[in-house]
Image (tube, rainbow over all chains, first blue to last red; front, side, top):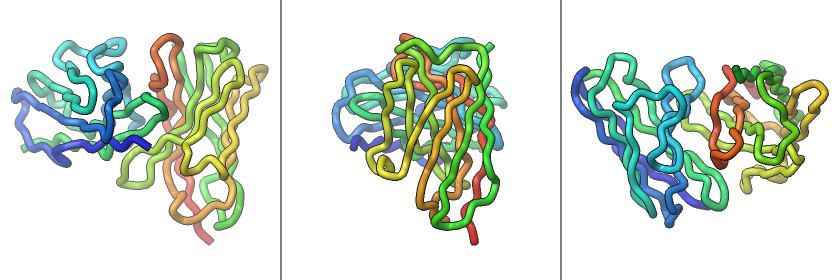
Length: 106
Length: 121
């Protein structure tokens, strides 16, 4: 089973700052990686799929990159509503989620 | 607009079987590229994928839980049902169902609101 490791576990930032979240796969998964956002008490929401494609209605400040084993979610300038937990998920020969990164207000 | 809603018991005893139902609207689960998945999340923990069923009735399961899971669909009712046997307190979690879009790969969008299931005697 492919393991996804997200780092850091927590990111403390201020509104307006940029955020860089990492997801590393235990083996190559090509570009088959998605990112989800989850706010407290809510279901996850798909942000990015296949590494760099924004899902419907996702703002342009969210972008994804990477291939193989190393992936990045970048939020160019944090809005108040962006403080949440972010999960990565792969779809290469199976399906697993990472452990999550919490983006909190500094 | 695609919507999904989970329903089922809030409390289950250890060793019992859990049955949760996903009732959806806005799409048809009759084409091969469309699917519905189940994902769970223990309180304060990460997401864990459980199962996925496609419109052509193809089914996929988490390898670690495969022996305990069964996923089925009823297209006439727009429902997907997940059963999990031999429940244990570690199975306490919010259970989500989610739409697997056509042409996007095995990702989930959107999700239902989730239903919290507690396993306790």
